[in-house]
Image (cartoon, rainbow, N blue to C red):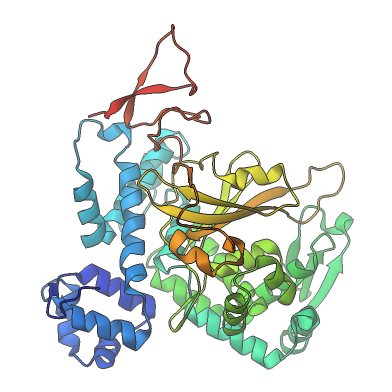
Length: 481
């Protein structure tokens, strides 16, 4: 925060994102800061400056860490732009990094639009979509959704993976049920039966086959496979209650996203119902207080709230409530082939949208040590350091001879937050050597990496039949233009 309280700053887009994350209108935030709504409007349009004094008042009034709120989105947007403009498609354009940072800060909407356009381009280039045919079949006002999964991920990131309406609804539900974690399944089943005439039935696998959960609307039955464990059963009941009792709140959040095609709209609703279910199992105030008191011990939190390891890790990425924020974690879920099936970030970790992850990150090593939790300090090429933990998890068991599903969960935060974690106890984080990783191989410019799967797209590949290096790929030091 600037020491000179009279310094004038033009940070309109940044200020607007903070207000939207708080869920406030211009009038509401103006009242809280003691200034006029018209001045707020001018600030957000970069037609008036915001003084450091106003920013301080904003932080005090709404208990904000302005450093986190001001930089997290911009770092993410910059990482997305850098990934896009590293593509050989732009090889002839010498675009300074500072221009990308300026664009990320001043025009986040343009950044998001470019990301979606590039996603559509890559899908079409791979032959996975027929863009011309899709566009020809659509009304003039509709929009092409290249990848509904990425679209929903973008919406979650835009909300910083925090939805206050669902948090409130979930906490109200738990207050009404007034049961401990071990009694939640029975209480949820009773609520579905008594309030909605929905009967819960645990069904044999030979009846459910490959289905884990199914709601029979006509018979008013919620069928859950016997393969689903205890925490998973409570989660599925809470999800059904979310779809039944919080449908209006879910639809309101979806509608705020603007026009959506049917597929991303349905996926967004399901994602929000899942969010509600986790919030019902681990109500915000109780879960946040326990996480802080236990120094974010995931296993103990899982026992206390009768939840799974992955459920707790996912829930930790949502602790963004003003006045009660948790550590800003990021989360990754991968299979043993390196495919990313889940990623969330309430911090600044630059996940790649168009590739895998670095094999040097020990999240991949958990398949070799299935019963151990691994910890690691990692360092990106720009020098940013993070602390992460990783562990393999097993999903609902599969009948023999089907392969048993296994995934690895990676949970991490910036190194400056790691002192709050029980897993960093006894470590000298300032002196700890960080494992040098990259976002992924196609964007990483580190030389002599024995794990490199492909050369960076920003460098020229060097082929020499007389030399074999540690890395399978040698490349020039100069960026391609």
